[in-house]
Length: 156
Image (cartoon, rainbow, N blue to C red; front, side):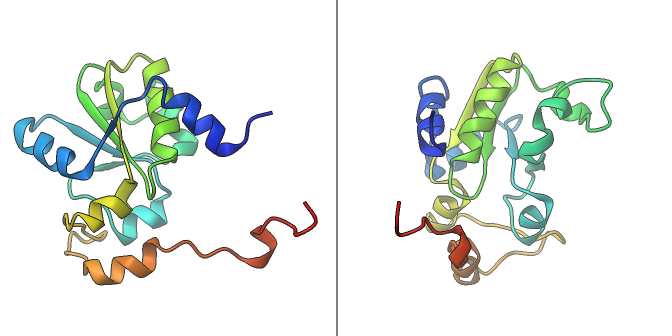
């Protein structure tokens, strides 16, 4: 049985990663580049890269196909576009990138380090109203907060 990080590492065999500064450069070079943010809607509303498309990981595969309640037409039509998938830390985006490639997307990459790395590179983030997010406040948002019941039991 694989654990989460082993699953991510396996997907990295096929999904290339791009660093935040490279994504900023790619956006300037390719205005058709699509950024797909696979975080949950509340995460996306709090802060995201301006112009990115929110498609939560849980519905991604059906959102990429016609005739589903979750269908996102812009995403269905993007199979030939350059697509960069983003999440908070860069793990969900690797898994999502693998799914996109399986579904026929031909130019997919995952943002290595996720939006945390994007913020650390001092790249801009916006909220659901399009207002700039104070990057110092983003530090608090991107810091993981584990509850005691989420921690590995000491006897294992």
